[in-house]
Image (tube, rainbow, N blue to C red; front, side):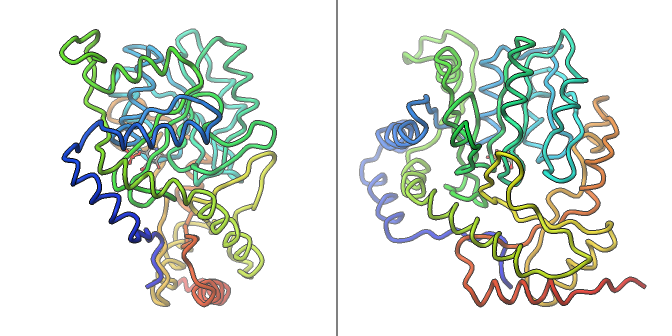
Length: 365
Ligand SMILES: Cc1ncc(COP(=O)(O)O)c(C=O)c1O
């Protein structure tokens, strides 16, 4: 089976982990400082705070922006649930905006129509590694005096022409969960060019204290361990190769999957330069999607539907009273299918994937 995600952990990772084990300092030691500094240099001096995972990173950043009970956070109707759990856990209200079908990302027009005097934050997601329209979203935020927090959990290495790399301006959160473009098992990073947000996130990450046992706030335990940090430091060096490899594979598939029943993802849209965390196809409907998935599986190509349900219509979200119907998100939930695009695919594997997908005809009885 050609797997959709596969992490390459080489000897330098083994050495890094052993180095940490030998120091006996497993948490909040030099490795965490080193990885934070490396990211900070990459992101033009923005402050980087390493945390235990992306979900915790979003929680800490929203809390640092002052989000609490009754506040509204406008977010996308189509993402992983880790985008909205922090909003709900903080007692705030997720306000779901529909998406653009072509980009899979939050619609700017929808955001505009959902702003109220309770809106505190816009939380867009760079889904599948394709950046949202940041210029427009930041403009709306400035006009309304609200924050933007970018869920960049899938977007390490992505860029926006005219702005630069995701993370180098504004406030964003990355995830380094095992299946991400670069990974350390569980891990996250809050990146911000706003010193007051950085200070608050640092405080909240570690039980509300900077000085041991002097608690200035009721915080969280959101720290990264030095073992995670050491693995991440090795992975950090691979960001550009991984991104280039994935983009090259995406281009390859765009040129070589020839099938009128499959809609391929656009390579670029507007100013957004995707890091292709996922290469996601669209099918006519759920039956076609399931049929193609079975066909691919039969021919040893792993595929996944990210995501088979919308956030805005998910039963658990409806039960809480936050559910709304978002037409475009529902279209994608019924039709998307991601195929392997990882940089480690060999030419033979890519050729096989393209052949299998080009040969598929819907088998609908
Ligand atoms: C879009 C998105 N948001 C949030 C998260 C949560 O990140 P983590 O799994 O590191 O908590 C993920 C990753 O899994 C994600 O893909």
